[in-house]
Length: 261
Image (tube, rainbow, N blue to C red; front, side, top):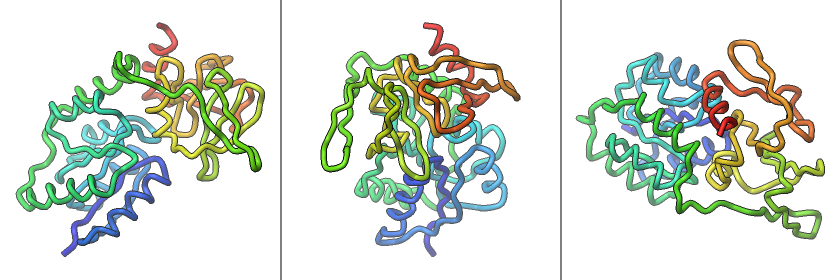
């Protein structure tokens, strides 16, 4: 009987890639469902009984650690994260399995082999979700001293390649399954990165993930307005394709700390 997996991932491309990798394993896994938010994951975990949970850190409505506060997770967890080795020290301390995105097929196979060795006696995850959430938020605000980040991006313009320095980038956004770079001169270009990948490639002191679709440079945030349900609305320059670019309630405190440095 194949292992049953539940995927919790807010980037559709990343979710599809993981599902495809799981389907191409020598012993393919059965995908019970996919969720892109804390609320969706909680609902599915109340209805389904997966053998393993693949869990991203940042979801559409907050950090995935909130799931454990709302529902009992009775299966092993493999975190799928775009954080680097420095940040992953938090996972090692708590003895949690993880895969670094973009997920490597060989690393996934090794994680599944380890999982099969533990089943069927694998215990439910035992770790301090509040501590992990706190550590990850701190790491968003303070990058490791040795970290290096991108200073420019190469984009395609017709048959030509164009180099866009970081100072000319206002923000990145995702739209219709593609990721775009928006310049300060109000030009946009497709880039070959997911939003999760960009979050690890850009200096977190300069860029903030406002929500799953927008990653903005501080200088591009022209105004911040209080919005319903304790959220914040940001006004970006150049004007964003979406009428409202909101900071979710779960990110508001971290966002304020990022601004007030």
